[in-house]
Image (cartoon, rainbow, N blue to C red):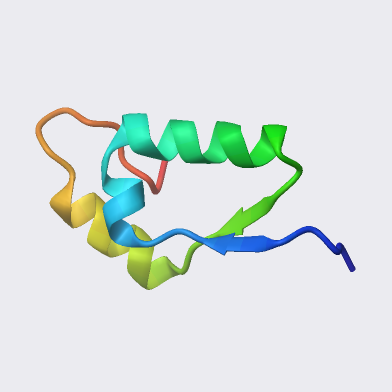
Length: 57
């Protein structure tokens, strides 16, 4: 089991590809772990704008 803090990303953080990338890249650089639920993924995809990349891909 890892002692690194676990970040739970919500739909607001995942809906924007830029925000999602910055959070995940920053977490990697800081030695943090991250996760989200299937429900959050569906909500993020539902609220993504235009041609933004979907979380589920």
